Amino acid sequence: PAMRVLIRGFAFHPGSTSAVVGTRVTFVNQDTAAHTATSAWPGPDTGPLRRAQSKTIVLTRPGTFHLICEFHAFMQATIVVHRPALAQPAVAVLAG
View (cartoon, rainbow, N blue to C red):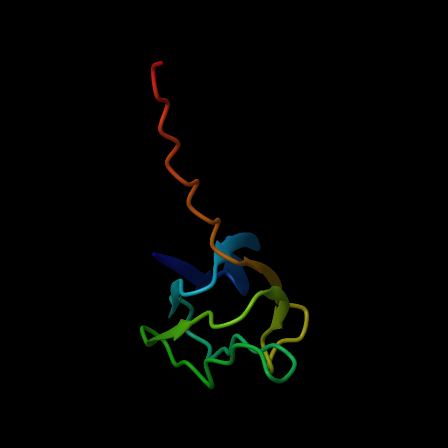
């Protein structure tokens, strides 16, 4: 699975979302200022993104990740990462 988080107007869009482990998240900076999407270690971190730059990260473990921009700490977002749902086993019904 894949998703995009846009950075524009000094905010993350969406500001809160959920995903499953293995999701590829692309952060795209549409502002003129540089931004980061950084969580406490060992969570996601894009490093600095200048205007029109993007970075894709892969969510590798479940948890709740609170992201901030290191340059503008008022910019915040949350990604809740879940384990993938287990497939339901097939059940055979035998007629007797």
